[in-house]
Amino acid sequence: MNFVNIKLEEYSIENSMDIPQYLMDLERETNLTKLMPQMLSGRLQGRLLSILSKIINPQNILEIGTFTGYSALCLAEGLRENGKLITLEFDAELKTIIDKYIGKSPYKNKIQLIIGDALKIVPELAETFDLVFLDAHKPDYLNYYKTLIPKMKSSGIIVADNVLWSGKVINELNDKTAKAIDDFNKFVKNDKQTENIILPIRDGLSLIRKI
Image 1: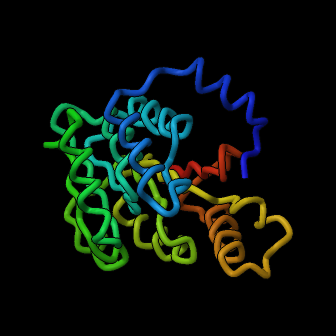
Image 2: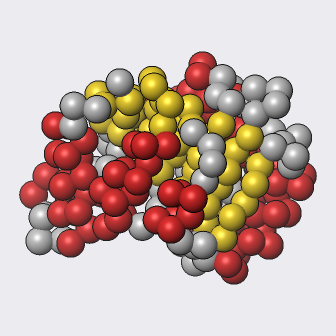
């Protein structure tokens, strides 16, 4: 669900900063070859991730849910000169396209792809993170969140995607995924460790700051 008129969204894209060619190519290949290309962050959300990353200027970024790598490449634009982005993806079949476009970017030496279960991997990571993008298995959002908080630096930001779940969080809680996301949203709202705001961009983004 888009919560903004499609013409306004197109206008917003046209009057926002341009994207590099490798992102245009990745968007095209994802749409041509993947069964659910709508999982791609897309230009407007991608530019938001880019500018958030540039504002934060993180040393370490963590992404949970790589898909084809578009959002990782947007987030990497704000890394410090010696910064690092770790991106975790469960589906090993996506590795080829992820590696291809990371290799085409200026960030190939800054991005580390790990294939596996994020709930097992995150507790073993040595790094602490300035910025996290969460866009993986929706029913596990609360589990991811509880695992991530100890790994966040003070004032670190978690960006959680799909927190409105096509509007189903309002009145369709018989949908198990909508119920899980609603539980996540309510938990975050009441968690004294963080403060947050939900933005109705595309399918909903929650910006969560660790206090």
